[in-house]
Length: 228
Length: 228
Image 1 (cartoon, one colour):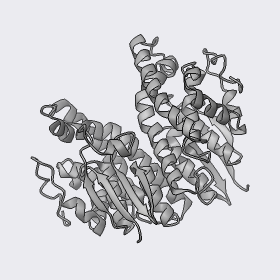
Image 2 (cartoon, one colour):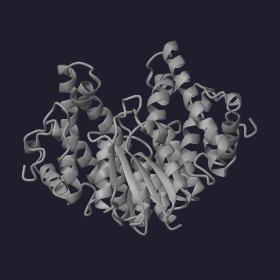
Image 3 (cartoon, one colour):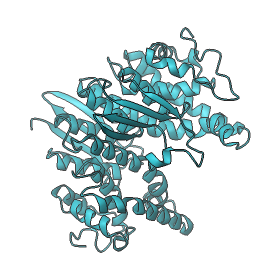
Image 4 (cartoon, chains in turn cyan, green):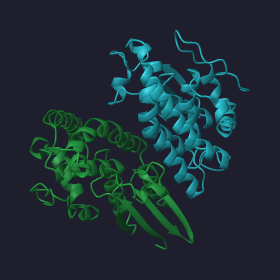
């Protein structure tokens, strides 16, 4: 393509991971710039009023474009592909994929990430002390409830939203992969979800994520194993 | 159109209002069914796993489709219109509209609605007691900060995301209109935003919202005044 694209991202931010997966699936070449959004001199503040990753800077035919966060990045990728690259053409599947993306961005973020990822990831990053046992337990319980909602979808369908790989699979895999790095997903309890995750994990777009390492915390034994 | 559409919504839920505005702008005829999502027998539980409004049930050419929440409803409206009804064709304007929708759904919800609307609306609805003065003050301060971010956009552009009315205007107006009902928006302090709001408020799609009434709490004196 004639465009150059630079993704500003944080490797363990689920939304950043979803953007990397979507660009990979769309076969759009891009450079990566790692940012630490909680640091005061983070360059994201200049690009995105919310200060949050991911931000994709695109230059195409002399014009530059700043795409802030998931909706703008996913939307741009779909627009380039005329609308059915990461969304099926079937209206019900499109609706289901959009519902699931919204679910992860709101419910999963609030109920699982804000508790469990806060304890496992944000506390060490921001030097907020050691994890709180009660919150870890609450977060793990919330995660189990969410996996329990996803398991029947993965069992009944080829992909989470239906017959085609969609935005929903990439967003779900992005979230679960961060938790999986920290050993928080007990795949043996969720056989259909495990099969689904192994399919997403085997895609070329996933490879860069499996090489990510969190300082001071090695990944779970099976994190980068395609045959886990 | 050959479809029948029923919107399940709560009149003072900003996302429900955004759906009504978008359907109105798209000139899609729909029936409204009011729901109270916090009540145990709310029919939404059967349609949307999150239990949240808005949900649009569409029957078209013998097929029925359940569209859960903003992304699915907005997406379906755009798909029907081949992608540029509530998003401009210009890529930068599309990106900006998507950024702003995400901003309202995450930042505005968390910082303003979760505090100020909780005190003004959810507490009376759920009989949680009278508003807390400190939280009211915090919510109002957060609202001022957000209006301060929106004012320069409204001043520099015809619509919030650029030259075309977009999803961003409908979502922003939906949120602000609920707060305006409760008299929380000091329009005089934000002249460009006031002008923008009066343009959105004058559109035919807005008329039904101005007739909404919250039991036990009459609207602000200027709520349904087009010349406020």
